[in-house]
Length: 325
Image 1 (cartoon, rainbow, N blue to C red):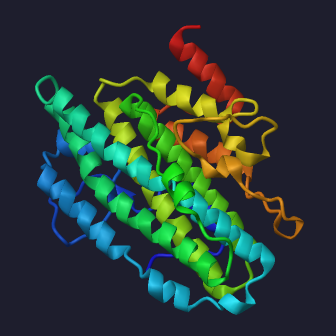
Image 2: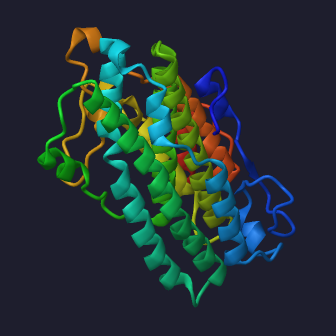
């Protein structure tokens, strides 16, 4: 089982288990996220079968059991704050399956679009779509763990109508923009769960939050790898990555979550972190840590594009420069 370090959010500063592609895809090295995916497909000549093998190895190395994790939690002794964090997390995780479904569908379409004109980009898209099956499975662990735990504590059940509403799929966008949005979403989730871990007292619940946060970090690393590969291909432009980051980092932007004065009303999809329920004063907890998230988004942009930015203002300035404004 892979867990976070003592301070969960600190682990986000590192890239995690990522590396340039090995010379051959065997088992003589630890499983990794291929940080230099474009290089792996071109200069190193790795095949999609070899890349898929690396994905499988890492997925197997990181597997954990929801049943065993829940057995380690003293359900009867959870505090109102802990129960509220679990309840909110369960609803947030209901919205992740649509993201994985959308990514697989979009990657398949983009793979077909690029197959003749740029086979390397087609391979990047196929590697992304193939990996989405692991992302979907790992997110299913998160969803079922939190929602089962909420049920065990006797908290309000999720009606089928809400379940269906939260399964709405995000509208399609450009692939690089999609990957950057997903990377930022994983940063948000990982920091939020790190904050929840720090606020929890039950050792088993702390371990669950740490495990889920570690998974989100790993997902972020994959999205950075795919996004960087698209930029490295020359077919996708850094300005699109910065455009999405600016959407999140601008004043009162998406990164503020439920702490914003004005939260968008959408009829296309649900972002539960925008709708975090803290009405109960005993459970009023907003795991925003916006400064930490801003720092990590800037780091993600540097990994994807090679351009260094350190603040939201620098992200906006760079975006304006890239679009020629």
